[in-house]
Image (cartoon, rainbow, N blue to C red; front, top):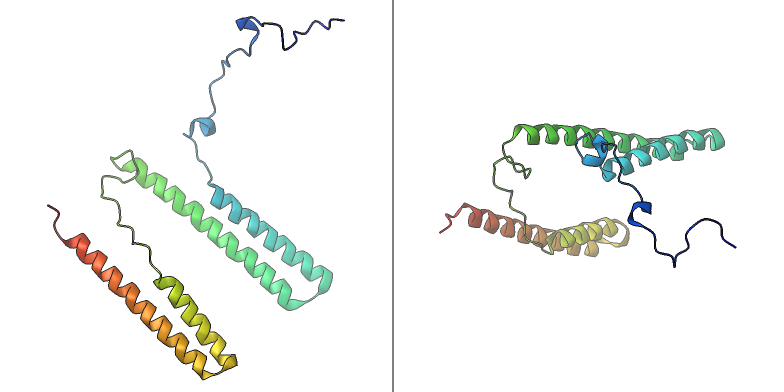
Length: 170
């Protein structure tokens, strides 16, 4: 029984394949139009989620603390979304005005700090200080010592990197 359609084992002529599209690609497909980044979309969705859930939570429970926290979360995400949109637009405007096509606008790239353990140490130290309020001053003392030592290490590394960047290159 034949259906008129070619099966996988039959050879199709080249003209039977999908014909090339004659339509011009859209501005978003070519990347020429305004594009919204994934991060902006994520924060926008989180803002909608927080605001809608905050309002729904209020009408379902009339509980103030949860409603305020959810609504505040939604407002904060909305502010971040707006800031990212405005920053992205300003960056694209500066890039168009700049002379380099690689986004550096003719300037040297900013130096990136070397990875280190200092931020983790500061976080652990401050966490120990916060727990010291419950478990006693000995934990606060240890936390302060760890945080200060980590901060000094981070500051020393930053100063060394800045000095290296200022030295003339040969």
